[in-house]
Image (cartoon, rainbow, N blue to C red; front, side):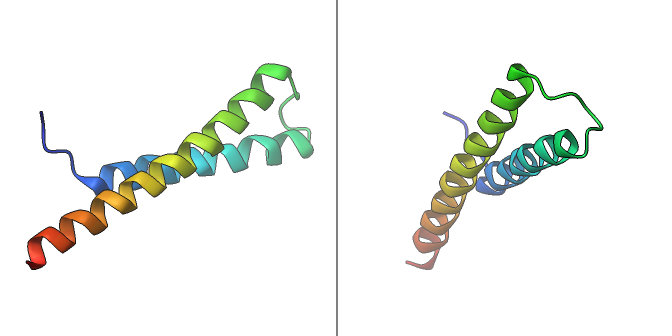
Length: 69
């Protein structure tokens, strides 16, 4: 198993949450047309970004505690 950096999870989660915010914002401003697919994509990006951020921060905290001992 590879040793993944937890900061990559946090960074990926951040970008997904930003996409999950930007898509509905652009839909409200009517820059892009609101479709079922885009609504679902915005929700999925926001939710998965939140989960990735939480998982990444948990891995980061665990790795910092392991180094401290």
